[in-house]
Length: 598
Image (cartoon, rainbow, N blue to C red; front, side, top):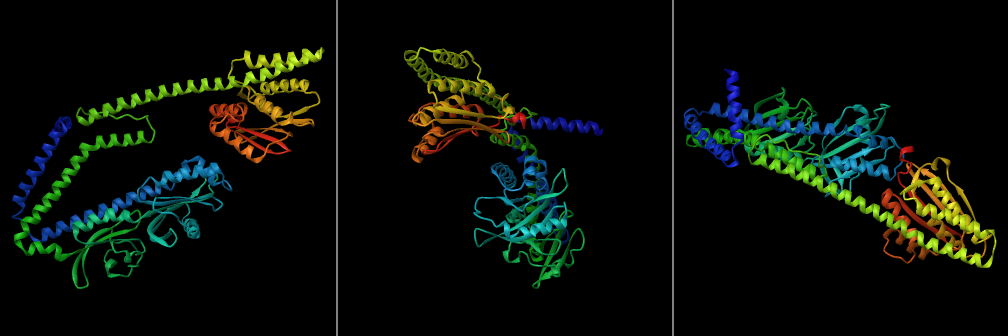
């Protein structure tokens, strides 16, 4: 029988859920109208002071429990947030790292920004590392916070609590100079997963307007005054700002609140009140509402108002039923909205689970098809962009060779006319090697050893062209030789150093190529002791390497800069440093080249 009823109920529910939204609303409307009228007709003869008092007390107790439950859930969320650093390996590593750098600042601030946006009421989030450096993120409207003023208290509180979270009741914090804001705080010491040593503290400040949204509806319904008091009797929240932080531990307002939940009667300033309270098991905080009895008993004293009060109770009940049903109806829509928010944040790997064939179900199906279409379009854009970048790099690479070939051929012609000797043969041989390297290979990348060999051939050729004019030194670690690199990266830089730095001076010059690693990045430095350049020209050259909008300085260096940024990402760069009469240094940073070696 029970199975049959359960099966029948599920079948009716499926039929109801598959109805159109308009039909659902009609059924709800009929339910909300018929039930109150029936209940009012029956209960109008049974109203009395005891039942109304009991009902109101029970209702207020339930709302008090609900209010405290919301606070408990919120604080439980905060406690979970305080252990999130342990699940973020980058943050955990940076907290144990002395000093600050760009990577540490970016990683921690991104994490703090994520935490600060988890809850709307969070005013500020702080994170200290093992060495006392404080990082923080604050909400709009707060221009400045002063974590140094509170650091000693944080350290003392967390040291006393060990690994347990610490909850501080409402207290003022200083912001924007002299302004104060009332917040309550959740903090916890962070222990390294590997060493179990304290490596920092996480602190979350929450604006007490959170309590306004929870408590104000309770006060509105009960016509009472609600306090939230911590385990030491200090006021955490009250609508009167002057009451915040006051100690009520010895006050008659709390003396009778000795159990987990309940109610009692008392007098406040000669007026009778009934107090309904609930104590949280997780925080030890007490939510206590003082309801004036005159407000409760006035309808009883005037029988003509009995029916009105009963009707209000019925409406309240009907609204509760409507909320439950509307939640069940809108739950798929809420789930779809959450998925849409994930899509808004960039996550396209989502799909709505369609259970019913109503309007919301059809909306979910269309949403799934839309996401699939977006993914297809993004893939098309990615493939198009990849092809474009490849074409751009090939075009940029091909821009470099003609100018070099022209100058070399001119040198061979001049030497052939002036000197009928073996140098012409050697010059032609070296040119053949250079042309073979530049033309016959179609690969996008070569090894660093091959690239340096090409540069050596080029420099040997220049030594023949300019006898006793230049010398060169190459000091690159052997561990770099097998690494892949774009073709024709160093040769345009060396060519620029020769023809713009060394050729224009009378004395011989030297070109030095050195390299080292910085993390997963490779740094190459090409130095010459040529004529250098003044500060104004140096500034213009570096700007042209960044924006690529001017051809004033030729295409060699700018093309190398554009190619490495296209291939290795925006963290890669080519920068120039020079002083007149002292020479020029070009620093080439290739990001991630040593990723597999790190």
